[in-house]
Image 1 (spheres, rainbow, N blue to C red):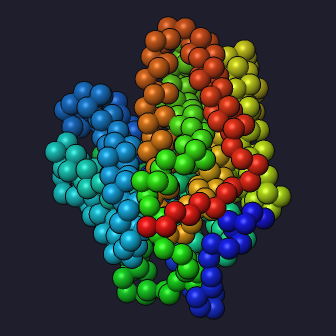
Image 2: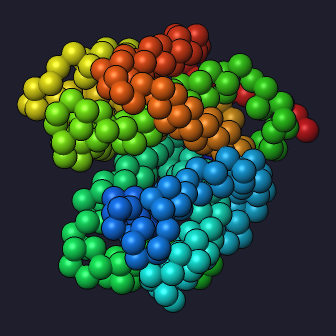
Length: 404
């Protein structure tokens, strides 16, 4: 166990069972906010006709979430570190209200846009609490597992959107799709809001140190290296779910991209739950990130080399298992490095890096749309800097403290 994990916090009150209710409410909000953000993604060709707009215009609704995570990342991190409960309550209210706005007129693009803006703008004020929230209720030994479970809940939201979008639309059109997402978003957002504002479970762990200077924190080499890992691994995830259907279509496997995304996500959820705790118990976070990054390089080369459905499915599970474990490992490392007082600011920085990586990794392969195997080789090559960043990390996380 690193020094940072053993000296950065003190127990304020006796832990209670209610802390698990707090985490359950937060995990549910992460899952459904992700699902509702992606509500239109799996049925874009169909809903474009309902809205009377182009597919690109529908796609812009999904792009609002990473845009706001970048634009509001620093602000959300700062406010979560300074006024945690009030900031999280505002975010919970926004992610509850956003999906409901779309219900006003499900077939109106204007109402869809208004709801999506509110939902996407609220997301940073909820998502960037993913390390600070557990740090308030769980010991340093428990946090890797809790952060891993919360990260898995985000990926579960991606999976839920992928597997339910088309069936909901087929059953009841855009009305049912929007109404179900509205109900889910409102219920979980309201539950989180009630937990924060009404129930108010007291924090168990408090940081005895004052907040560090956030500008200095963002200049630490360690945080930038973690950001480099996030840039690559989250970028790969976005690239895979964006382009794998196109790649498989060009290779004569039309319709096989969907099963590969599901396989990748199922493997990823398993990896996100199991690897971080294993790495933390053995103080092997750096080793885990190196292995994860190297697997991506060879995994995408293997994707380019085979056309067998069975092998592709196995590859998707294995690549996803390692790929999606990176986020909780990086987030937990950043909490040790930044301390509880600045955990949200560090998370926001890493979230910005990841979402910028998502943009770069989605745009770059467009140069190879007509050569799908070349696209996969390109993604493998673009994965190498992530492995190099992981190699340059210190052997264990270092606690970072700069007085105000």
